[in-house]
Image (tube, rainbow, N blue to C red):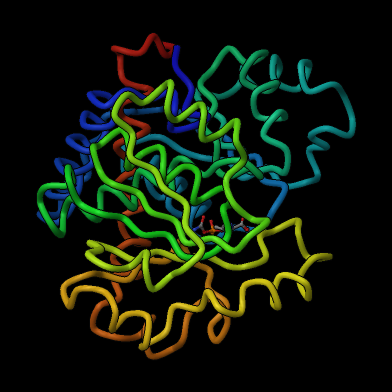
Length: 309
Ligand code: CP
Ligand code: NVA
């Protein structure tokens, strides 16, 4: 049985297989075919934080695949009424997969350790693997070949940035992040990428204009992630020079696309002109969350990964 807790755990062939399944299911959906690859399978969504894309794309994905979902908000008392181990063991009796969105990454690791069904990370403080997979899928769909391409991150060295850097490295892309001092990737993460992804080309700089030269894509995210609200004012000051605006886009190649995981704080990390402009692919990117969640579920719950029968 496999989990999807971080991009690190997926090999390059496994990512490519997920993309292949996603592509096939997307093409079939465009022809009106919703292939029931997972009849009767049940996915529980255990969310401690708000979500539009992750929640709805997973729920729609499992319905398209012939199964069903249940959304578990805070009323099930995850982390409150009983130990994470007891919660995991019992929930696993009822469902085939748990998509979990919470604060600490360690909570997801603990949940997976005690679950007897697959656990999928739907965002933690450390990573957002399903987002990164959909983003890289979007780039592959748009440009064909990813290897050798340069993916540029502008902003916080956060959960999305880490997952994207790892996925980009797995697929042979160069990843350059322009991050303000104090918000860079930690040394342990950089060391892990170097040891676990041979040939990884991940660089952190402080100048966004230097970073975007030769970019295939320019990606940003909010300056203040969920759970960091108390730091908002400080962050607005620290990130002020890291806005993706028309001037920054003009320093990148004309065919570079603009990406954002959404939701966006328009006027902060990105201007309306850029996010609504011709280079922006944010809606297609969000749309692909559905197709890639289907690829992830089909890969994870299909017969080859030892999922429940
Ligand atoms: N990008 C993303 O994960 O969006 P939600 O927070 O709406 O799920
Ligand atoms: N970095 C953001 C991503 C939201 C999808 C957060 O964690 O809030």
